[in-house]
Length: 138
Image 1 (cartoon, rainbow, N blue to C red):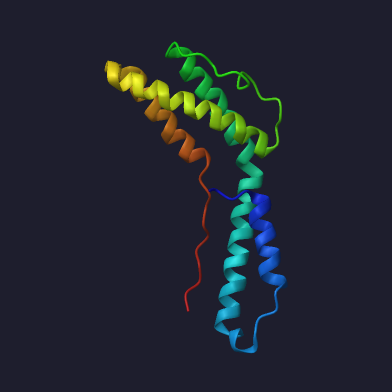
Image 2: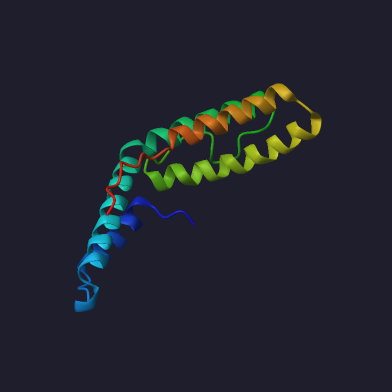
């Protein structure tokens, strides 16, 4: 399961609102605050770039399906809900169709389409990349 931005931020809230026992102060508390802050920073990046990445991915997958002669699954022809959860639902449907197409492409030995699909995966991973800042050491 991949947690959503909302779930991550709710978890941060709960972690920070829960008072620590006296023995958990010091380094433990400093680490807890650092991890909570890092999660919030990564969630902010996802909130900023997540929709754009999913919209690009969904259209790129549609293009690959079309070029491979596969049908666009029902309900995934276009975006109707631009919330991340709505985009993810369409993305999951399209990715299942892409996996099926990729299997067929590999079985047929269609190297051009195989390489196009692999290039999509590389670009997709780059679009979803979250950047970690340098972390201070102790």
